[in-house]
Image (spheres, rainbow, N blue to C red):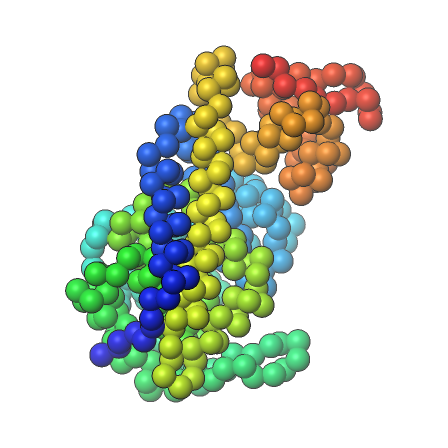
Length: 346
């Protein structure tokens, strides 16, 4: 039987308290439905982009959004398949019942969806039958050698069994998720797609075991931005007594960073009643929200400033700004070229 080894440090307790406080704000926020839907869509795009980016997928956040919208982009087919597959994974997780048992079949289906049409059919959704290694492809250095293939089925079974024990269920969902993420990454049960599957398992634990945040939450964003630290923390418990304390401190810090960011967005949107009173329910993207915050401080914005603030192309900036003009949130000043800028219309 798998039994995780970790200690509740002051840092872990403090992070859990911070996470819980932010979660309460998000759950109880009076966000209008149109904004909720937009934040959920943005979170889906971010989750998909960042989890595939960690594994080397070169598509930008904007390109991932276009794929999810069903639009065609110029990119390698494998990269596009990884994005579509992970959206299928997240939709599958959403379809599972609340507080139901986590089973081996669920885990294998998550991997099958992750690797569909990328790995051969006998590898997608099946445990590996060969030894694999983890390393840096740039240097060729081996950083970790997972357990042999003969041990994979039993080690994975022990993890799944533990996730359904009273000992596991007595832990806060964020701690359960961190433990599950690390142990699955340590076992490395598949030929490829282990990182995405481990992060999806963590998402499954969080969303189905009482950590609902209205699905505004993109756990992977922090780890992608801090990729060396992410891998370093993962490897901290790979040897000896496999003490997970350092990893859990890192994992929970990432959750705290991302959930605090969502909390701040929710508070800004919920407290700004002037827009709701004047325009009713308006769906705004996270980019547009960022632009409005900039406008409140600076008074005006240009297409170029929007590009820099939101890290998008000129065409996307133009489309976003025109959408705000059409919704009568912004007013365009000037008629052509660099003289055009935008101001708030309320």
